[in-house]
Image (cartoon, rainbow, N blue to C red; front, side, top):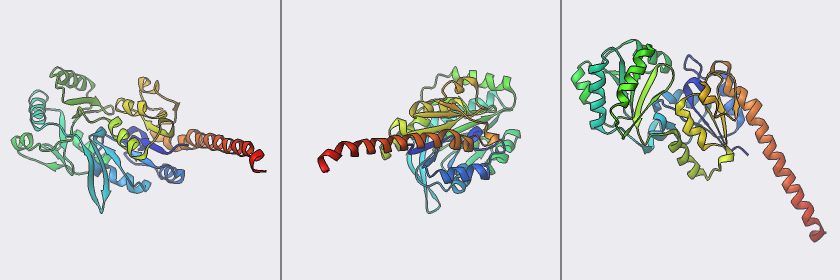
Length: 293
C-alpha cells in the first residue's frame, strides 16, 4: 500500500509556466494519498500550489534546508539548515565582483532579496509570481545576509553557467552544496540541506517503509530523494542520467505527467497491494476454519 507521495515542483508537478494544471490538481486530490512537496523553492513560492492541492502537514523547501508547515497563515519551521553568514557574505561578494552580469539573489525564511532587477529576476517573477525585496545599495545587499537558506544564480548563457559553477567549486567550501536546478539555475544551500533529509523526517514521524513511498522528479537534486523511496517516477523532460534511476518514466511536466503516472503507475500499485492483502486475509481465514468450526 502506498502511504505517501513526495514530489518536486518545477519541471515535475508544475508546467513550464510555473503552474499546476487543474487536471493534475484534481488527480492528486482524488488519489487520497498523502502528498508532500519537496522543492528548491521557498515556502512563499509553494503556498499557492499547496492550496490548490489541498495539502496539509509537513512540506520541504530549499532542497531540504527547511521542513515546515503552515499554521494560521504563518510558516512554522520544523527543521532548518542555513548557510553560515560569513560564507554567504563571502560568496555574494565574490560572485558580484567576478560575475557582475549574473543574476544574483537570496532568500531568508519569509523574503526574497536582490540588488538589481535583471532578466533573471524578471524570469523568476514570471514563474513564481513573487516580488523581491529590492536593496538598492549593493554594500547593504552584500552585508544584510542573516539566516540565508538559499543563494540563487540565474543565467541564460550556458558558458557563463559552467564558468561560475567551476569557479565556485574551486573554493572547496565544505559547508555548502552547489547544484543545478533546471537549465538556467545554480543554487547554493547549506551542506545539510538535502531533499533526503526532509523525507527522512517524514519517514520517521509516520513510520513509513521504503516500499510504501513514491517520488516524482526531474533533476539532479531529486536523486537523493529517489534513493529514499520505493518507486521513483521520473518525468520525460528529465536528463538521461536522472532517468536511469526511474522505476517508471512518465510524460513531461507540460503533458500532465504526474496525473498520467497517478492513473497508470500508482493506481495499479495500490490495486496489487490491496489484492495481496485480501489474499493473505482470505488464506489466514481458511487456515483458521478447522479450529473455529
